[in-house]
Image (tube, rainbow, N blue to C red; front, side, top):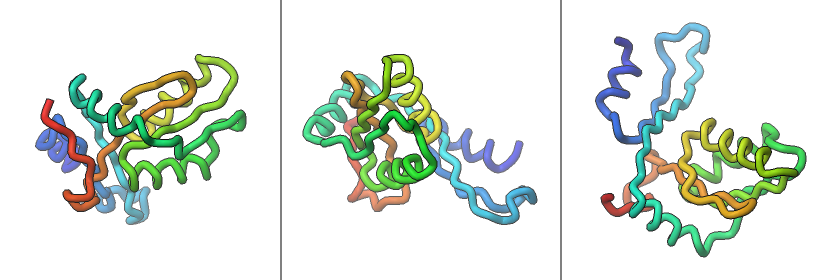
Length: 140
């Protein structure tokens, strides 16, 4: 069992961000941020986050051009900073909208809290922030 598997087992049920550098020569000692998100939010926790997200305006807007590299970079930095964000996805049909939202969630280990029409509310805690700056979710 390698170190990543050990960390994952030790922290099962939590979100774990790991900077991986050593032991992988193909990375050339470049740090890579890995997110593991076995996040299981209860309905009460989702309800609390929906309440917080009600007043938010969409910070990321995806248009017909889809997900570009610059949009994904902005999405990651916005999600790191705010933890709870609204994303507006203005594409043709519902299937394309669902696919884009699913890709955003899967790539960033974010949790879809709510989707109404073309607006999705996404949550991912940032463990690098000071505890007093993080969103505090009540126990479910």
